[in-house]
Image (tube, rainbow, N blue to C red; front, side):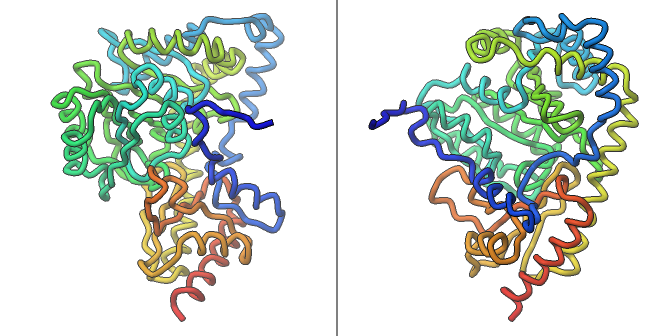
Length: 398
């Protein structure tokens, strides 16, 4: 049978990252291609205790339908926690629990953009969100980045040039894939442009609690006085990605529409995971828990960077992140990045992600690749980086 797919999905392709991960089924391959939290970061014992208590004392709560907006105690906790961070404004915001940060971003696009409307984003950017946006046939326009975040002059050029700009998607903290952090000055400037050109900002912050170097920078949402910023985050990196528990703080009319769209999507997010997330976050020493996570990722990042500094060809440049999960490396101009990544996994048994996996347009040229330090063990980091060091010198220094 000749299947006729809808226009919304006919041009979508499988994630290149997922395709690369197929190579990791080979037990000899060391993968720096994933984006998973470190297994040792999971609070397994406390989650087991909470789950046992919940299923023993109130199993119906964990097994019955719930409301679309989310488990009320969790929502109330999130509102207070985000208020402390400047990411929830009680006078005009509301909040909904979503099935991970991915759904938060997808539904935000769904409720705000029509087909053909323009959505601006950093270039490169997170492939999961890009595919969600593409599924709505929006005009997706990438804006190049500088060391401290999105290029403001190019952003304003696009705002003047493109029609019906409705939304700007940003990952200000330890951006996926580049690891860059947007400066405070640029966050303020971006918000001012939103007010000037009348568009909304979707601020995606899955890694904000994972800062292990530098000073904390307030969220763009903390600057929001006009109800122009949607703030999305998740428990995936601070509790468990398997919970699929994210949340959105946004102006109440936006949340009301997201609620309706979520009702036709999945009714509500996993209630067991919501209750467990609430009980964990409201009983654990959060300061100590976050400090442990930061210590884990700081150690792994520094271990990987040590090998880049001392082992890689000096023709490769990289961005050392202040948090998050990723390192962005760039090859010299005369290198074929795709060939490099293919050879790394095929011949050297080390998987990395080619930079064009995060491109906005098919014709974008990338010389970069992404390394993940959170998922592999220390032993895998040492072995894999020794192999990559040898590979880069063989390819670039001879």
